[in-house]
Image 1 (cartoon, rainbow, N blue to C red):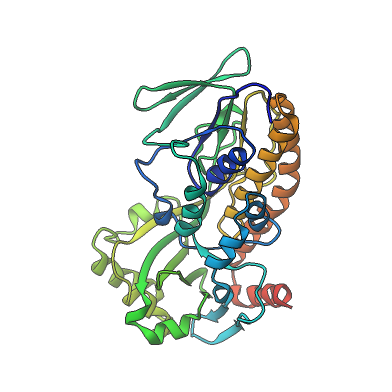
Image 2 (image 1 turned 60 degrees about the horizontal axis):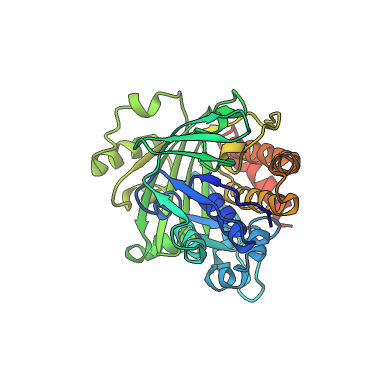
Length: 380
């Protein structure tokens, strides 16, 4: 461990930020997470996550939480179904409950709760929204928060996602709109057993007409539904769908899937609660920057790509690689950053490219045929 006390600031309390703080803590290195929300909101930021054996699970093993994760994980959640828009099934992959797979599912909130429970009291400060980070002459940074609070730190790690306030210290690159927008809904599967059976115990995708309907069964029994569209950036604002009036919005959304099967349109009809809209962004694939003293990035802040199951796994691996580098180089933080970044650039660029290509493929012409071929190779 370092021979002198270092003030390490982690901006963002998602899986990557939590994992980094926990790995440092395990090795006797203190850090502080600054989270803009006033309390933990991870359960609201995403649904079920598949945690990969060669990345996310490696980090959990490193921090000593792999066995607890395995007890909580849902191996049946690896079920996967692909339909065309007429409900003709193209892929039906059923997980073998007696043979644990390499990508078990866990809800984001449950995973983050596992990490939070292992962190020392006071490690995370809520309600701290970073406004600006100012480089100082000695490699340190002065952090300015919205509430007027300031901190001077030896290392600031941007774990603050797509629109990172730390990233501008390293690169002019910004998140760009992919041309795809998404509408998220939610269904209580207990109320709709036929729909639950249609969905499978894991995830379902239906593709057609450059659109998609997806359904993902979460650990709380709810199905997280995603409707994805190729659309201009301002479409969510100009489409005249009353997203703040869920029942009216559902009727309007159904018109976009008018000639799709009734089984698939039930994913819209049966939804309850608030409707969430979002645009899908990406950073330039293969983004690199020149290493600078006292600052680095992990997760989406470093290599944002469209959602394809790799984001949280890369964030957790980033956290592991950065923590191990800090531990190895002790007081040489600049060398630790440079070593981590070289390694991160190498493994993240290929994964980001694959995530981008696969996501765009799902909303391409003749997507069902293309995705079916890709999945058959993956599942073979």
